[in-house]
Image 1 (spheres, rainbow, N blue to C red):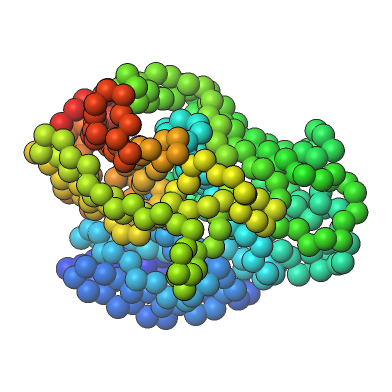
Image 2: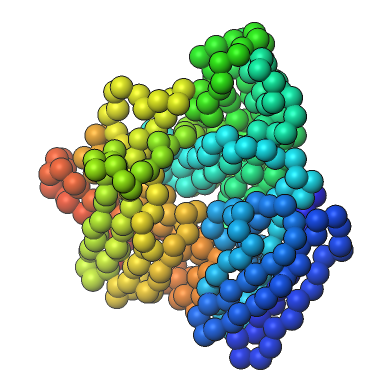
Length: 397
């Protein structure tokens, strides 16, 4: 993927300096760096955007911070004595046109919570400035193949961004008249992961259409097969099993309008506690779209967005705060009677080295919470917390 990258290194107690990548047309230039005790504000010039702002602890492993932005400025946490930042132009050739839609992991009752967590994905879709997106008639196959995407996903402990046409993501096939698949692989040997993104349409793919399409026209599913078995958490037995594959759905969510006197959103704000450990959660549950409309029947509201950072602490749980989309996964139960949340603080690139070290020493990689919201728990348990270790063991506060 072509990219324009500048790296900023900021020493909180010493100095800062800047290393530019080779200059290209429309290149990015860091214009201003405003450091403080807790924040670093970056301003840059040039490029086309959207931009991905990325953070590193060691100049080897980079993670995207937040969502791609069309702004030319960002305020980021100064998370260590030495912090590394860079800005990447995701569309240096100015190929993308109008925004088409955001497709993201459907955090709902279906699938496993670890599968939702591992395959957490956000795909920003854009039309191009050329046919078929500028013509009055098109085939859906051509329309979707040429969509530009910014694909944000997890790989190991890093949040990465891929940018390009959908047809360049992998091998595109149309195994049925109303189905399109995109297949690709990452890693090798025991780390090989094979992905298939499936789009199932309510109309034929190779028949000319004139009706404007919606990003929510197809059903999206993402499957991944692993060469190395991955842990799978069983909430009913509080144990870990193993799996060689995950499958999740992706959806477009209904836009939130704060001016709506009765917005179709449910606000969740609660604390889960157990034996001195506590986790504070605050988020929206919203509504999916299908062919541009909200379905007439909906049994379970899926997670929509976080409203404030998640905090946690306890006798054995090191205090942490995270505002990362990828560090937290919500899985509502049927009819939202209960909710499970999986938190992996180290996936937040702004977590301090001190907190990372404390979590490692406590053997806490992930934190699982359960909250009964409707008083329907079969075992009398209204809330629960447990820890999943770096050694794939389950232990309790």
